[in-house]
Amino acid sequence: MNRYVLGNFAPVTEEITAFDLPVTGKIPDDLDGRYLRIGPNPLGLEDASAHIWTLGEGMVHGVRLRDGRAEWYRNRWVRSASVADRLGEPRRGQVADERLDFAPNVQVAGHGGRLYALIEGGLAPYELTDELDTVGPAALGATEQGFSANAHSKYDHATGELHSLAFRYGADFVQHIVIGPDGRNRSVTDIKAPTLPYMHDFALTEHYVVFYESPMVFMPERLATGVPFGWNRELPSRLGLLPRAGGTVRWFETAPVMVGHTLNAFDDDGTVVVDVVVHPRPIDFADVGASKPVLERWTVDLAADRATRSLLHDRPQDFPRLNGRFGGKPYRYGYSAAAELYATPSATEPDRPDEGFSSALLKHDLLTGVTEAHEFGRDASAGETVFVPSARAAAEDDGYNLVYVHDRDRGAADLVILASQDFTGEPLARVHLPARVPLGLHGSWIPAA
Ligand SMILES: [Fe+2]
Image (cartoon, rainbow, N blue to C red; front, side, top):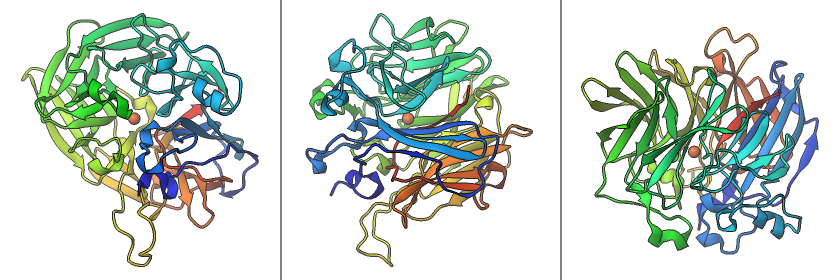
C-alpha cells in the first residue's frame, strides 16, 4: 500500500474555519502573527496506489496568534485554475500559461506586505490573502525567460530584498533573481546549467550566492510520470559560488550526493561555511523519507580551491531552520525535524500501519556540538518548526519553536509552542486544532505588520 495515503500522510477532504481555539498552557503574549504550513493535499485521489505525494495540490494550514490567544485556524487549498474549476468556483485571475499552472505546495513566503504560495520549476507563485484565500497567480520574480520566484527564496534582512534561485524544467540555465521590497525585480543573473540539474534550495552569505548541483537532473523522457527527474551516475556534485557583487561562478566538485535544504551559510576568514541537509542516497520522489538525510557542514577554502565535508549530526533529519536574523551570518543554533520512517509495526501494536514519521524536533548547538531532542513520540508527525524570536530577543535562541504535532488520541493536530531555551521541557502551550494537519512541506511565521 502507498504510505502517502495512510495515517497522517492521508489528505484531508474539508476546508475548516474555527475561532478561539482551546489551549493547554499559555500562549506567549509577544507572539503576534500567523504560523502557516503548506503541503501537498490531493483534491481527489483517482488511483491511490499510484499517488505521488509531492504532486498533490497545495493546501495551507494556518493559525493566527495574538494577545495570548489563538484567534483562528483555517486550511485552504490554493486555487489554481484547475483547483477552482474542480471546486466549481470562478477562477482567480488569469494564468499566463495553463500548462505551467499548478497549486503551489512547497512554501509560503511573505514579501513587501504580500503573501505568496511558492513552488519551483517555472510554475507560477500564487498570492494569498491574510486569511489564506487565493488572490490569483502572481508575477513575483517573473522574468522574460519564463522563470519566477522559486520556493526557498531567501529574505536579506540587511537590504529588504528577496533572493531566489530559480530553475525551469528543461532550461539549460538557472537564474538568480533579486526582488526589491516593492515586489519588482532588481537584478537577474543567468547561470549556465547544462546538465539540467534539479536545484531545490540554495544559500546566501554576505558575499556569495551558493548553489548545489547534483546528479539529480531533468530527464524529459520522464515527463509523463509527473516527476521528470532522475539520478545520472555519470555526473559529479558541485557547489557553486556566485559573488553577490558580480563576477563569474567558482565551482567546487564534491562527492556525488544531493543537498536538500540549507540550514545556513556564512563567510568566515577565507572560507565559506555551508550547513546543509545531505541525502546520501538519491531522493525518490515517490518515497521521500527513504533517503535518510543527515546534517553536514561543507567548508569551502577559497585559497586552497577545495570544499570539504564534515558530519554535524547523523540522526535522519530535514527541514532545518534558524533564527532568521542570523541568516547568512555566523550563528550558533539550528533546529530541524527528525525524519524517520517506522518501517515495521511496533511490537505492542503489530497491526498498525506503517505511518510513523518525524517524531521529534532537534536543536543543534553548533558551538558545543550538543544536540537536544524534543521527543513527541511515535505518530507525532512533527513537521517543519519555525523559530520566532521573543520580543526581548536577548540571545540568539531567546524565542519560541512552533510546530504542528499530531495528537493521535484526538485524531487532530496541536500547534505546539516550545520555549527554545528550554527545548526539552514541557511545551509552553498546545493549541488544539479542530482537524488533522497531514504531514506536509514547509512552515513559515508571518509576523503581524
Ligand atoms: Fe524544500
